[in-house]
Structures are given as structure tokens and as C-alpha cells.
Length: 326
Image (spheres, rainbow, N blue to C red):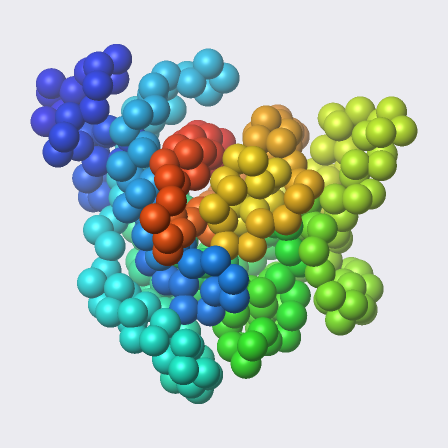
């Protein structure tokens, strides 16, 4: 298949992610799909995102004006785990019946599955990105990355701080992912961007952990821009808090909701798509290395609505994340 692959033509029906001919074994960067959304608290549909993004990705022109033909290093997506799909179905049913202990038990299984899969990929010398699923999906991956890159920092794009100790009784909630990272791992620095929806306890947690958490609140960023501060200068400040190795955790609702309106918990405000890319570019140009990433909360909804736009934006953002990582 590789011998007849032409990046300037339409993607073949039997091609991989982005229409590429690479298999996991030969790819430099491997994408791990995690179809998991048992702890969603508003809109659903994120468990269907990996496959929707996969389909939408085949519409992307592979040549990148900024990064060139980075795809030639090889990008492949692992098959979705039927076991994860089964766990998701059973845990969602338990969540609807307020059976929190069962959901927490399944969350532990998912965390361990993702941890083991990530550990294997990193040990094999692969670069790795995760496609959620809700934002609780990457905890196991972050844990494995920290074992491999103990001095890494996290650049966290989100509308929400995700620093609740638990939410609706779920210990591994999408609203608790970064609380779990701070309280259960050795991460030295979490840098948050776009945050505009959080509770008072989360603000206190940020203040109590100020040596490890730096939060760039959306309202403050907007005010600085309105007062004439260049966005490039704001990005320089954000980047200055990151270590030399950076893991990107990207919740799609960190963007202005016009880009992915069907995400589970949309909030007005947020980053423009090109602002997010510019910040990632600033990280790369600073000499710091993006070592891996997750992209979560791209939602296909649970109602009969048009969600092709969300998958399209998600696929294009995913492609740029792959490029900056490669």
C-alpha cells in the first residue's frame, strides 16, 4: 500500500488515520483511542469521538504550510478496544442509576488499561497521543509519561480547571482529572490556559498549590488583550512556566464553543483556534519539546444533530498536535 500512496490524492477507503498507509508497528507516532465517557455531567457523545475524528481526518490535506510533510515520519491509530467499549456501556448504565462505586471501579480499570498501553508504546520508542473520550481518559497516560519523563510539565487547555476532588461521587471524573494528577502523581508543574468555569474550592486548590499550578484565567487574558497587550507576549509568559519537556492536555472546550459547539460542557469565551495553535507554535519555537498529548471532549452528541463540524475541527487540531510533536 505504501508503494502506491500519493499524499496529493484523496484518501483511500482502506487507509489509516489522515488517509495514511502506516501501521502501528512502523509509525513513529501512535494514537490511542479511548472511547470512554461514563462520568460526563451534561452533554454526552465523547466516546464516539475517536471514530468520528478518524473518518473526518481523511479530508485533511497532508502538506502543512508551516511544518511541511511531517506525516512522512509515520502516524497510525491503534484499533479501538472492544473491552473499553463494553466497560463504557456498563459504566454509563451504572452512572445513570447513581451506582458510583461501580463507576469508580470501571474508571480504575480504564486508568490501568491506558497506563499499560501507554507504557508499552513509550518503551517501544514511539511518540504517543491519546484521543478521548471525556477528559478523565488520559490519567493513566499521564502517569506513564511521568515515569518516562519525570521532569515534564503539562500545558492544559480547558474551559474548566478540572481540580475538583470528585464530582457527583465519581473519583475519576472528567472534572477531577487535574486534581488527581496533582494529588496522585509527582508532576512538578501544571500550566492551565483558557480557564473560565470553576468553583471556589478549585480556586483555593490553585492557591494552595501555587508552586505546582499556574492558571491563566480567560477573563484576565481577555482584559490584557483589550488593554493592548500583545497575545504573543502573553504566550511568552505562559511558555516561561513550562519545563523543557511538555505534555499537552487539550480539552476541546478550551476553545471558543463556535469551533466545537457540541462538546459536553461548552462555556462562552475561550481561545480562538489559531490562538491555540500559535501558543503551541511558541512552545516549539522556544526550544522546549512537546513529548505527547491528549485531545478530549470532542463530542458527537447523543441527539439527532449535525456534529460533522466538531469532528472536522477535532481532526484538524489533532493533525497539528501530531505535527508539533513530531
